[in-house]
Image 1: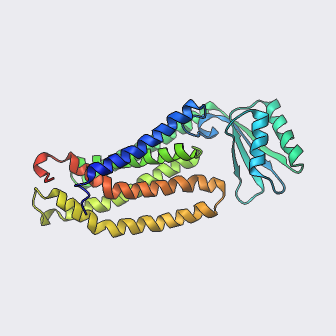
Image 2: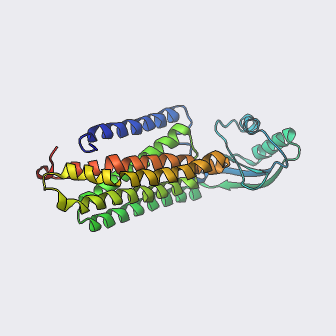
Image 3: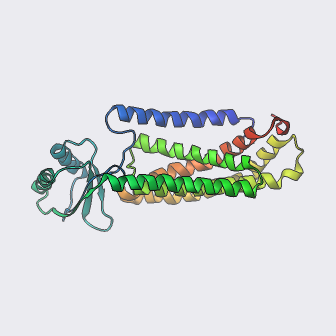
Amino acid sequence: MQIIQNRKKFFILSLLVIIIGFGFMIANAQAGKGALNWDVEFTGGTSMELNMNGKYDNDKLISIIKDVTDQSSPQIQEVLGTNNVEIKLQSIDSPTRTALVEAIQNEYSKATLTEANDISGTVSGEMQRAAIKATLIAAVAMLIYISIRFKDVRAGGSAILALIHDVLVVLAAYAIFRIPVNNAFIAVLLTILGYSVNSTIVIFDRIRENKGAFKRNQTAERINKSISQTLARSINTSLTTLFTIGAIYFLGVPSIQEFALPMMVGIIAGAYSSICISGSIWYTLLPKAEKDV
């Protein structure tokens, strides 16, 4: 494999995907929909749960909510194992909430309101800070561990840059597909970080093991060889995980799909970055004396 020789092509491909994602964020923001589809858990708002007590049409329900609240992007998801539906909106007052319940009951007479909560901006702000803190702590811990294990801060830096790549690709997916950014978002990011860095460490381990088999100025050949030796393992691990998450996505309810779709994107991005990006960044950070291409 000629991964190192083609590293610029891989960098450009990744950059294009990330730029497209940011383009969608800008377009969404200019359209008044928000750069990302923030859930009320992050922005604050109103959460309502209704027992529909029978079948209902999701599109019809969304239409009713839009007519009553004049909000363009209400979030609706089925409560797993029940006939309940959860509705998340930007903050609405008590009269509007009452009018919304009545409008739904006019269409679905058996529907009953079981729960209604206002999520304050303070709570949502705490969730945002918790998400950022969790991601930063994970990244710093990985940087320290990898740098110590491989006795090279460049290895740790390469792994972290590859993880940032994965996070940006996942964010692009959230922007393009308008996936709600909710509690699952934190779980997705941390899972992808752990999954991706595991594959990267396997490759870096093989690069270290092969050090004695190559001369100092054969670094590119050593990295390419190491990636080739671990390629089957990286692809097989990613595919088996992808098949499992894919089954969850296609057979699951909307709340599960909101987790599974970005996970699939993250798994693909993680496999790609482990094979094509992490080793290439490590090579790029090496001094000229150790480079051969």
